[in-house]
Each structure stands twice: as structure tokens, then as C-alpha cells.
Image (cartoon, rainbow, N blue to C red):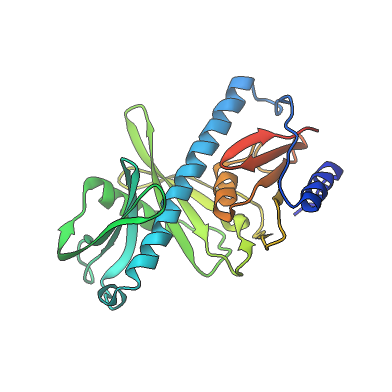
Length: 272
């Protein structure tokens, strides 16, 4: 990772001195090749997808924390994975599995409310058939995890988010690395794999960094900082990790040497 520019160093020093994030937002400077409309659409998309990814990943973490306390779940070797789905203001986490060679079925379902609390938890005495949505999401997760990517962690989560373009439906599967240290933010190992709805083909894939960079997020860190050479703007991965770390994230998009602050899921350009 490149060292912070003088501007970024000053911003980080000021934040560290004050103990809180305080940003001077700028009159917008357009990245090269983008119109104002294109830039705003990209920012809106990154914010929306990053927030959705955070909700789904948080729901999985909360659901796992709940079910792993249950004796039946801990000893249930049928469970092979999970899928998530947003309904109303809740996120449903359905744990799936089956016998060897058997069709995937729903075994447990945990409903997580918008405030991050478990609203309900069900163990199906008789496994239930998956819906079309759940079956497709599970297949997309499997395909993404087997698609071949540069791994930066021993363990990965795969979160499948539905994407609709007109009448076409597909999946954006985000591969989220586990943190190797308690205070690490493993942004560098994040990948996205796009598949068709029934997960028969990989439509595209990308990494969000060129290395396995992990950011330090200890108790004295008021804001995180990273350089980003791959895109002219911060991405949904940056929004996600800022929310996950519960810290502002300063992103230096190096192609145009522009500075951006992500705070509470919103992307803003910093004063130059």
C-alpha cells in the first residue's frame, strides 16, 4: 500500500489529535472520464450495495452467535451453509444442508431485526424445501467460492445479494475474508463474483485491492486510511468495511489523487 499523501497525512494527524473524525468536505472535483451524473450514480450504487452487504453479513454473525449456543445445532453435521434474504425490515438467515448427495433443505431459520436483535429462531423438525430464491442463492454462493480467487484468509464468508436489471435477475456474491487479528480490517482480501440467477455461469469477478492489505483498527484509531488504484471512486467494499469497523474510512483514489471520506455509509469528497 502506498504511503499517505501529504494531504492524507495531515487529515489523519488532525483526526488523531482531536480523537474524532472531523472532515472538510469539498466542492466536487470530477474523476477523469466521468460526468457528474455518472459519478453520482456510482456513489449511490456503492452506498446502497455496501449497506446491504453490511446488513446481510451482520445478520449472519448475529444468527451464528445465536444458533451455536444451541446443542442441537452444534451437533448437527447436516448443516453445510446458509443463505440470507431481506423481508420487510428483517433479514432472514436460513441454515441449509442435507445428507451426502441429498438436495439442500432448510434446517434452521433465524430472523434478525433491523436493530440487530434476533426476532425469532426456528428449528425445522422436518427439513423444509428451499424456495427458488434460497436455492439459487445457495448455488451462487457455492459457485463463487469455487470460482478461483486470491485468498487472503483461512476462512471466507460468501454473501449473495440479488441484482435486478430490468427483467434480468442475477447474483452479486461478495467473498469476505475473516480477520486474522482482533483489530484487523481485512479489506484487501475482498472479492465480488457475479453469477446468473441459477448459478450456471460466472458472469464476471473482481478483487477490490491488489494485495492482502489489512487496516489497523485499535482503540486509538479515529479513522482508517487506504489508497485505492483500481477505481476512480470508493466502492461498495469500502462502504462495507467502514460500517463493519464502525469507523470513518479515508480513501485516496490514486488515479486522480482525490480524497474521499466514508462515514455512516455515506461517501463524500474531501477538500484538497
